[in-house]
Amino acid sequence: MANMLSIKSDLFRSADIDDLTKLDSLYRSVFQICDQDLNRTLITLTFGSVGVRTFPISVPYSGLTLHFYLPSVGDSLFEIKQQLLPKKLLRFSDEYGGDDSDKIAHFFGSAFLELNSVGLFDFASLFGYFVEYFEQYFKVQSKADPRDLLINEAGRAFGRAIENNPHALPSQFFLNVYDTLNSHNR
Image 1 (cartoon, rainbow, N blue to C red):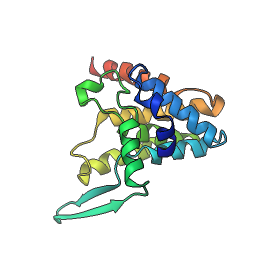
Image 2: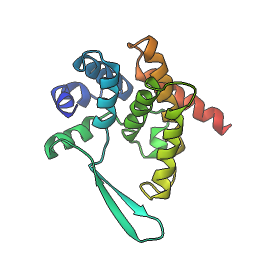
Image 3: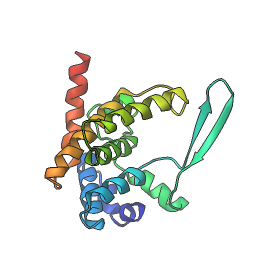
Image 4: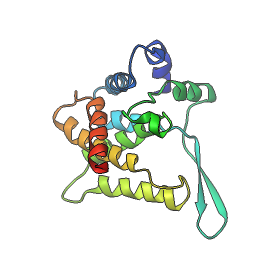
C-alpha cells in the first residue's frame, strides 16, 4: 500500500482534492490491486494504514511496559505513507487535532470483521469495544475515543454494504459519522 501511495503521490499531495475523495481513490486502487477480492482489500487497507510500527502496553499494577512490533515497510516508505494517508476524514477533524488517519484502520478492520461475520453473534461490534477498552486499560491510549466507536460502527455498515455492492465508497460512511455524533450530543 505504501508503494501505491508513493506512485500516486501527485493525487495524494494535491490540495485541490479533499481527503474523503483520496480515501475513495485509495479504496478503489487497492480493490483493483487485490483483483477485486473484498477480503484481501479490507485486510490490506487495515494493516497498511496502521500508523505505528510498535505500540507500548503498560501492564496495570506492575510498572511493566511491553513493546509489540507490527510488520511494516522500510523507513522511507513508512514515512511517505504517513505523509500521504488522508487525514481530515471527519467534518469535525480540527476539533480533535486534525489527523484522522488512525481511523482508517478502525474503519476497514471493522468492515472486514463484518463482512466475515457468521450467525447471530456480533463479533465485529464486540471486537471494536474490546480494542477501545484494551487501549484505555493497558494505556495504549489514555482513554477510549468515542469517535473510534462510531468509525467502527460505520465500518461495519460499510462491510454490510459492500457485500451486495463492492463499488460502494467509504466516504459516504465517514460522512454519516458526523451526523451520528451530532445526534448523540444533542
